[in-house]
Amino acid sequence: MTIQRKHLVIGGLWGLALLALMAVAWVRVIGPKFEAGLSDMIGPGDYHLTTTDGEAFTEATLKGSPLAVFFGFTHCPEVCPTSLGDIAAFQQELGDEQIRVFFATGDPERDTVDQLRDYVGWAPGVQGVSGTREEIDKAITAFRIYARKIPLEDGGYTMDHSASILLFDSRGRFFEPIGYQEDLDRAVAKIRRMSAG
Image (cartoon, rainbow, N blue to C red; front, top):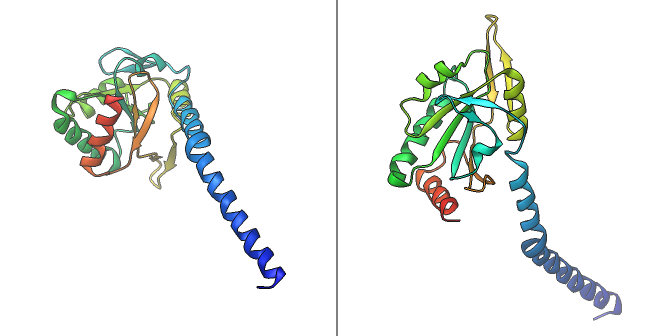
């Protein structure tokens, strides 16, 4: 083996060792700190909204027992009714372990508390959440979700929005999302893992 080739092999081995060391650092130190930081960033804020039960929905609402938050709107053609159906399915699967679920509107101009009550009333454990445009915008920012009006040709509008259901543990910390139309068994397993933690 030539000296140059020997140096290349040694350099390659040192590179692999460095990559392995970086992977261990990520798994044991950096990754957990990143996840902990993300958990603390989603949900906290100074929003003050109202639920369909007439209660305040604030940062304090996230604490006490595991729950889920979903942002949508009542004129939603597909994602929101499908997600409510998924929520009803996982609540049925959970039985006595059902969690509180809040359906927060991204369209407060059309979604009053009364309208939300009718919209979510059939799904077990789900409360609607609405408020002023200013307070809804604060909540959208606090929950790090996306919601935007999309003008229609007839002069009306629809909404483009995030489709994940956000899970929060009993301390009010973001746990992880349930993706749009995620497999029922996986969604229920996430909720049970969160509730056990």
